[in-house]
Amino acid sequence: LTAILSNVRWYTVMFGPDIYLPLTCSIYGPAFPIILMQSLFDSRFNTIYGHSAAFSCRVITVSLLLCGCLLFMAIRKPQSALEAVILTIIIGVLSGTAYGTFMQIVTMIEDHRANAAFAFGFQGSGVVVLILSALSNMPAHSIEGFNISNGEVAQFFISCAACQLLSLF
Image (cartoon, rainbow, N blue to C red; front, side, top):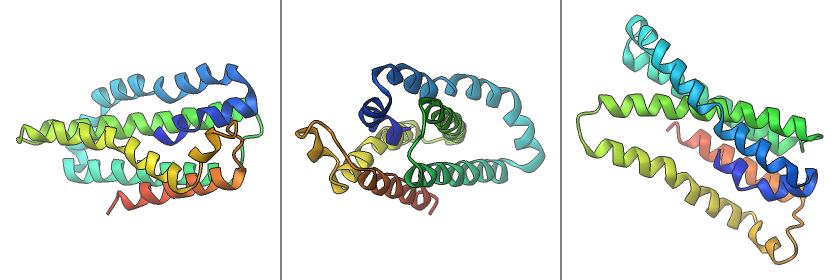
């Protein structure tokens, strides 16, 4: 989610300023319906498979799929605005699933600090993306009119994918 939003300027350079609204709607739009569906169906899966197994399966699956999307984005520059929006919708669905799953886990923890820790971790990903963009030399281009190369964007998305994978451990 944050990896896409931090590159909105890159997408607007490629596809024009009209891409901003579709990307933003694509990344945030799926979260609400996904969370509603989770509230309807997740308890059934949790009852059948047990909370621990069901949550572990969701977290691992979503993390691996997000990692795959980030690697795909590193390998392939979007050829059209539609391709960028479709990939962003997929990431929005996965992010919504992850958010809903972690919110369910937090509600099961009796320690009142769990919600604050979750919120910090979820929002703290922005700091990680900021550090990764700084390490991949992307901010230096804001002075140069933001003409970043595909190699730097690829390096950034690969770094984000690595962080996503490491978050499983």
